[in-house]
Image 1 (cartoon, rainbow, N blue to C red):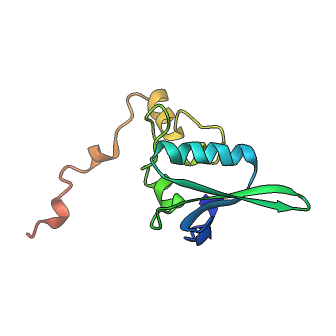
Image 2: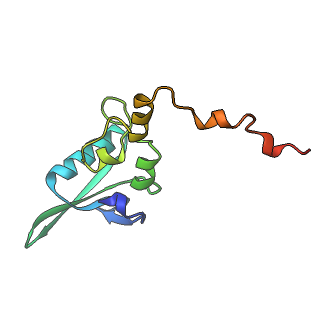
Image 3: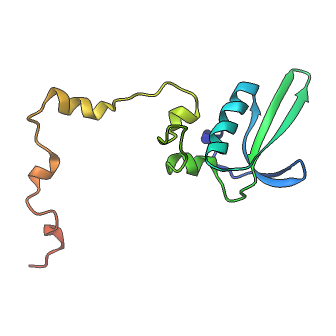
Length: 128
């Protein structure tokens, strides 16, 4: 997956210089990423690579400063319903709806916040 590699690769696809989003894709993965990028108003270019082992695809966008890793972690890509594209959604993994650190608060509603221990958070900046 492209999010495991932070490199920004620029290549020419169909005579147009573009940023490569991912390479070695299946048709289903290509369609999934193409749909996400088109929702976010990117012009998607694709290249079909025919090899002995099968057909794979490469997709890119014509925006040369676009980096998929930064866009996903920056939370700037949106889905169909307007929600944010997360890393799990980009990688087509199952998303966890609840984060583990919220479970502690649910099980212990009287737990003290860390901020309660610091009476004045700006005390370290005062000069005595």
